[in-house]
Image (cartoon, rainbow, N blue to C red; front, side):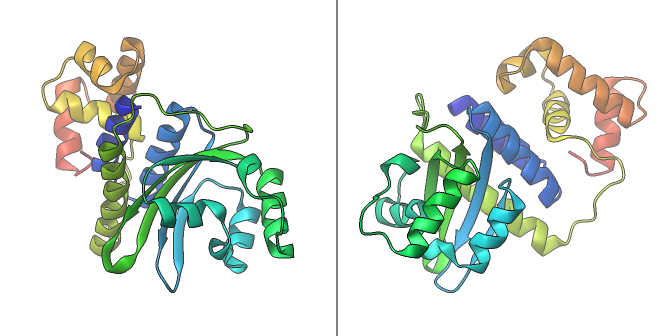
Length: 235
């Protein structure tokens, strides 16, 4: 999982808007074997989120303030460390009507298991990244560096804040997060074979992303593509 975390942080570093951050998180969740992601910032008064959950679930969750009874949130507050979870493991007895409805909805929308990484934020807030799946049981992370995972969550938080604070204008020449990451490594003098190892991508996939970036930037070669991308603040 460490390679995927590194790839996520690299992708976040060149994210210019919330859309590109969403793309980076989506790629990260898929690379880790999950279908969806959710990033939460939880304070005593409100909760904000960016996620890839079904819109109906998002509306119900926020409207009904389900964070109060969400077992993932309550477990995160109690443990404050990376953990896996499953709807099957949630208590099934002595539930209120609201809790029963929440559990039923989670199953209905395919949010049956996951991996969550909570981090203590400023002024008592909790930042949390959850990767979720329709599987009944969550995958166990392999050789995951917990400190590195928590660092990634903090990086998501600070990138979102930086984008919001600077009111960045989106460039008409937009690259996908994968194209931008590969191009940035090329800008640092790495060859395609080295980029392949660093990003955990196939050599031909790196070649494909760099070629796409060159075409989008209307560059004659990779050197010119890097120069154009730097001039326009894309990387």
